[in-house]
Image 1: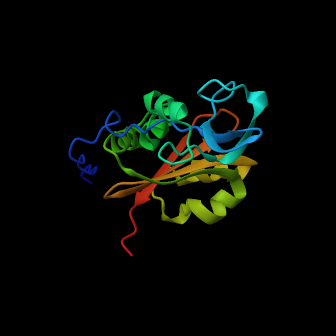
Image 2 (image 1 turned 90 degrees about the vertical axis):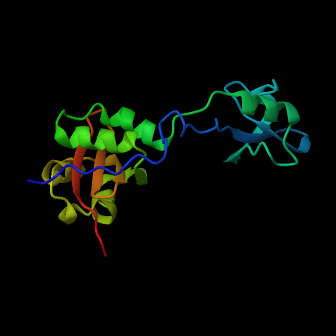
Length: 185
């Protein structure tokens, strides 16, 4: 009989201690170059309308010299966001009940490394990332889900013993889980 082994908690690691600062997109006010602002739902955090800004494809950096002081304060005061383990935990709760799900949920609660979490063409995810031949539990349903979907999400989680694969169907289906022993090479 295999003993159940899940990595030991990392000195007080928890979802609460691993929460991340809120992140905001960066923008500048049209005609006022050189000052970066944090974007919110209707414009900048400091109150400038969306119609007056140009958004950029990078995140607002509160510590940068060119950052708006008011946006800095508001960004720092914004509620923290769940860490990657907590976000994936919430998705895995919708997987079929069973030992595999329970083990993965426990592993995520203990701060296991989420090595990869991507979305894209399911055939490419299966070919390049899933490594289904290395999985011992749940590989068949995971392969079927990736083989029948046009696009999907895929997450890889590792603890000291297991490599978990999470297939996240795009069409709102339930996540499918698989696992295999960690490669020691």
